[in-house]
Amino acid sequence: MRRIACITASPLLTERDFTVERTLREVALAHSPRVEEAGAGLVYVDVAGLQGLFGDDRRLGERLRRRAGELGLPVCVGIAGSRLAALAAARLGGSVNVVDPGEDAAHLASAPLSLLELSRDMTARLRRWGIRTMGELAGLPSSGIFERLGREGVELQRLARGEDPRPLRPWQPPPVFEASAECEGGVATLELLLARLAEPAERICERLAHRGLAADRLEWSCRLASGSTHEGSVSPAVPVNDPLLVARLLGASLESTPPRGVVEAVTLRAHPVRVPPGQGSLTDPPRPHPRLVAAVLARLAALVGPQQLGVPQLLDTHRPDAVTLAPYDESQEPSPLWGEGRVRGPELSTLALRRLRPPVPASVTFTAGRPVHLRSARLTARIVTGAGPWRCSGEWWTSSPWIHDEWDVELADGTVCRLAHDGATWSLEGIYD
Amino acid sequence: MITAVETLPPPGRGPEGLEALLGAFSPGRLSEIVGPDSSGTSSLLLALMTRTTVGGGVVALVDVADGFDPTSAAAAGADLSRLLWVKCGARLRAGWSAADLLVRCRGFALVVLDLGDLPSTRREAASAVLCRRLQRAAEASGAVLVLRAPQHLAGSAASLVVGLHQLETRWTGLSRATRFAGLTSEARILYAQGEGGARWLIRWHA
Image: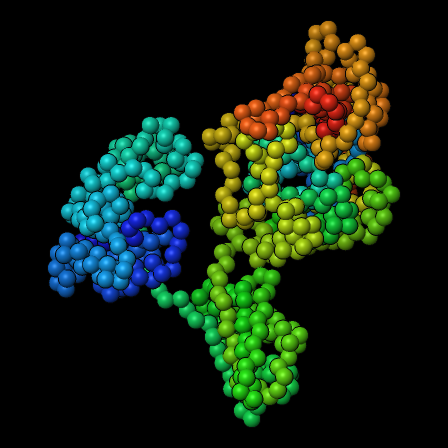
């Protein structure tokens, strides 16, 4: 029978605290070898079969809480058959709260949906449906959930019903990727030093590749015959685990800062990172490989400036050209195409506006209330047709309200452009193209 | 809805629909869209970007003149989360370099270099050599590479040149114009490897 203990720091943490995490881990590992770290100040412990050692669940919970208290960390403990029920017991109950076997669903029924850590879209959708608690979600028909929310919805409903098929992800100590090589008799030239570094570089790269990792920073340390230490590091543009590439990077780094003396030993350390695969599945369209994208984005940022590239995001305002740039995230999920927020398909024949940034100051001549001539640094011509004014305004409730009138005008040469008048000055906002 | 597109006479000679025109932009090739202001070049580019993002592809847009309007793109139904927008601040050389970097990065389905409306003396400075370089990079990466400019620049490096010019503007209103409704432009394949001469009428809706 599965029994999970959830230990949470009290009060709840909103950001990671390494001291708290270390304490929680120490408490948990002192009672069970199977411990999962689940976020800021939160660990799950597999406590199945521990009754013989520590007594029943309540005694075990008291023991966990007492041990954490001795280490200076007040905690709450919940024990149940599933992670979510244990979390609800820890957060919503007393300092130690035990859910009897088979009672997970009943215990979760009144718990709020916020325990599920839903996405913003999912939260909004469930709220519109009037679903506030786990019990309300658990009571919906599964077929309807699948039709409307897909597999994600069904999985959420199973969690809300106290079902927890996923095993714990046991915490493992972070691996250390370090290798050393002794230089018998000492090495005085850079070529020989690089030759000695090749072997530890190969060992580290082999271990990195074996774990599906790559190094985004390499540190080297040379012990000199004089007793001093010569150190340095190199950060490749993209994470690497290719020994030849690592050797070249180290060579370039050592050439720029060579050791001043005879080297007796050299140590190489790698900082590992996990690089996700470039393509999710066979049916996904191809995407740029994260390693390549990281390198290209870094070079683009150096070329045009880091603020000048990214994914465009429209701001929630009626102010014209209210756009911001978000960092490009290769792993970002695409926007829903046909779901909520996207009620119609693509309109390929949409006319585009080519904006002028910043807007070009202009002067407009009026006759009988109609614009007849435009003069600006970009376009100067007679106006043959014009439609407007269309008034736009907003943020009148703030200290920086805005208001302007927009005109669409056609010039004598056929160019159609958008003009704006803020009450005092005219500007050429863009050209329809 | 593609009813806005019709084939010019003789009927049935050319491919029908805007989709067919967009399908002429081949992977691994440099294509060019040329035309003056208000001819529909930006709209055709937007249609291509929309179709690519909706199909799940990732688009890189190198915007030399910072003229891209995300509001128009959102109205067209483009998935902005699949668009990497590089603004060059009217620095032409940075634009060429950025396009060169992006077209070599495998995985982008479409790489667009929009030269905007920079003065022609600046655009033509080194375009022939750079276009040949970009074309070879596109061949290696398999991306659809599109160059938009007022005039044809790429020379023989371009496998497809689509020229647009405006036929009419459309306004609504009874006694006088009260709203701009869109414009109609003619798209003509000025050059294509293996074929050419096809024409389309495209009605763009504001």
